[in-house]
Image (tube, rainbow, N blue to C red; front, side):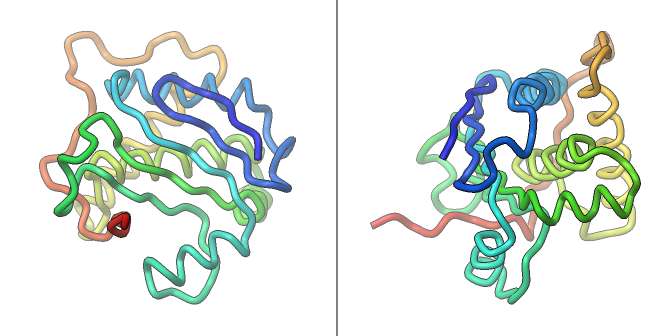
Length: 180
């Protein structure tokens, strides 16, 4: 396991995923996204895993017996929301699935991972895509944040605009099980 801090988020590469991504560039992108979202005082973890690990998580927490690309475990909703007010939650990304999707989309792995990270972080902030209108809004915000995360982007947030937030909490975001 390899760890690299980025603002309030700890970036964790599980065994076998080290070296799959440039951790400095990844950390720079996470910082840019967090600044654009106004989440500089909260954090959590971003974990890069393989398909077997994300498959198990997807099966356990979503009852879906297959791997997926990204999972978000929100800590700011549900009955334990007040336990750690500065912890947004965890985003888990499957590197092999992201790599397959990057090939299909004909773009670099870092671009695909950035999109998945943004997607997961937006879920931690309460965004959802359970209606057409919410899906369109979330896609637009994802595209905006991905553009801001790319190298050479100077503007992090439009002047006078509030950080992105959502009025309702996500319904399908995964919640951590109670700890014993």
